[in-house]
Length: 307
Image (cartoon, rainbow, N blue to C red; front, side, top):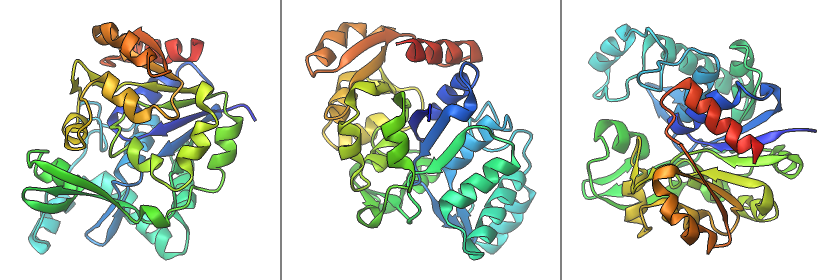
């Protein structure tokens, strides 16, 4: 079984994967997706990271925002705001159709892995999308304003409240999705996408047994740093790393992944930190990791595949 396994979060992962499917056979890809951002709103089951990657691969995503459908309307949301005392989650009409279908399948007894496969099949995806687990796991952020779901912290409060701690609720009862261990064992490469290391990749890593599997595959694990010159391109990874007293740099990310990471791609702007990373026992490479065009996404993907 020839395959490439990816550990993925939302927008950063989707950008890289968009480049990757243009240079390798998409049927070879096994994409393990963070579900710690999942939540229920309006009685609907919502899986933000799964949807971002699904819409991107289906060429339906709003490229300006990096999430949701392109040419979206929000008529349903406007009415929902009249019924519910919140409207901060910007679910468009087309996006809501996905959440309705997913929720209906849950009520019919399907699990998250089965539902994700059904949606991918409906949208004619060739890559294999796999939720990190079927159990409910939700990331909560303790802030100076109180405890809130990560999506609320991210969207409603725009990452402004000071972070005190992070909790992966339900993670101790989570089980790695059934075929993931086999895929990790057989993979030619395991790629950790340039996603938030704390609340995208970190959630996957905290599933019991996951780190031990990765430790045994260290030589074939490759990661791309989401931190460039001490900051993120998008999202609160820098703030969340700081809240855990981690160095906010590509070196800090390397230390967070150190026990299982064999190879690390950092941006050209951080190349002076290459030696520090290699002192951790991790082979480091410098490349342009800013994916602001399809051509650059493909170049980064090709560089990694060629290593």
